[in-house]
Image 1 (spheres, rainbow, N blue to C red):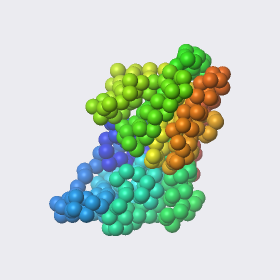
Image 2 (tube, rainbow, N blue to C red):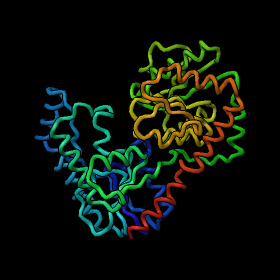
Image 3 (cartoon, rainbow, N blue to C red):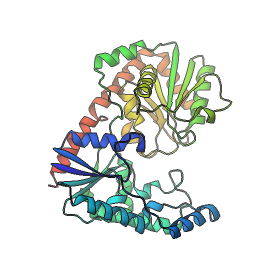
Length: 380
């Protein structure tokens, strides 16, 4: 099958949406004859709307979603329709709902994303106190996309449930397909066993992976590492994502690495090295649609210690590839969990290898691709 892959941005740019646009495209290439990129698209917002949105955000202190305004979304869909004229495609596929909500085309439309608009409201930063008009337009657009598509694919059970609970949609359209790891890891089981065995039992390296320090729970991660040190385990917290200048007056056991980009060979090598050396991915996130960091950690045999919010529960299975605590859990609960595993290192090694097995079974693009191929064939 030939696929027209629709994105508002340049899908080849791995810095966009944590690289998901690129890796989804690569996943589709593995299950289709040809993938034709339709995008990036021109982003047009009228002067009137710009002024209006500034008034809402700066004066009324209300959130707005410019891309979900009907005029902006319709303009996206018009661009897609024009580009499709010269494209041979059996299916129109998008990793988002905005550019396909108003799209009129002969091909079946499929989208694969990590959240619904309703799921983000009052959950994700920037989505609190959303202006009434923006709420209306956002929900209308999501409903249009669900009406317009043949399949609505979500990366987590949480996202799928928010679609079913907040919109009128035939449940047969809804399917859950977890995303894979945005790393081209080709580690074998023997490779992972060697990596896990090389991690010292008398020192615990924790890895925090995420740009948004506040949303990802950076303050909690520091406290967990502090308590582990107080409990007698030498713990280091390696931080990837926030600019080093942001992380001031932190304890000496916190080691900031700043932004580590996957777009360069040096950045990728550093990221993979830090993952291989880490005992745990520590991500006490306060809001998460479902970070691909969990799949990336699993691909290196690294269990995740995180929070059961949003789509995390689909990626992390308690006792199998880590533990997802409740949002109300105290840092001492995280520290005790890690301490117990480090104190019984054979149990830690079993969990690390079980995490890698979850990557092999569920959290890789090959598995996702097979599921996607079957679903796409069902609508042809």
